Length: 243
Image (cartoon, one colour):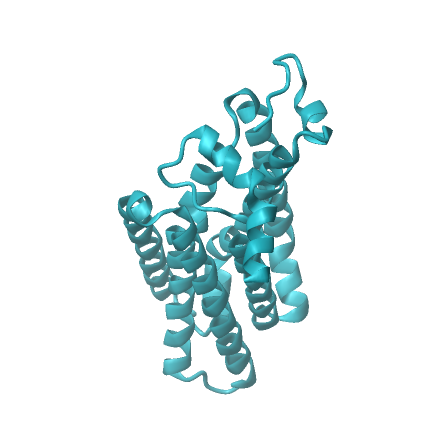
């Protein structure tokens, strides 16, 4: 990767014609942080009691129980990701997590819509199905986007730009988190939880596509090797298309 003088600022280097790799790194880091929060995982956790109430779980004891189960699932799979992150790599776990979230959210959306149609009595199997899909969603988040976002977006920046680049990516992360948290409940009340979850599933399909196309594997790579990965990304895409 071509080095600019140490005095060059972050934004100067970002727009420099010699810094295509830096721009790709910034887009990648911002993208993975954006999709981490656009997945709606934080909102699902924040408002899980409301989600479960709509699913037909009304008693406080039952709500507490399923919330505890969801927390155990989320924490357990975060540990799984920590144990296998350096063995399988960032990219496979991220793709597994995001694609799993897409499927889980789609199933949760369909289950929620079905329960909306059951006005008189909500079938027990449908309620259990929604609880399982919520737990699956947060579990896949803990495998992929939850831990890997922080690892990946920090290790891809060159040392001289890590502070500024990570700050930009984290700012996007927190901004999107705030927007989703503030709008999730009101939007769900407007269009229903079912449609909201189906929409989030579509977001995760886009996230999986983005990760597949733009995120190279960085496991075991030095900073210099990571820079080369992002420099060669366009050539690699062209080679794959031609072949």
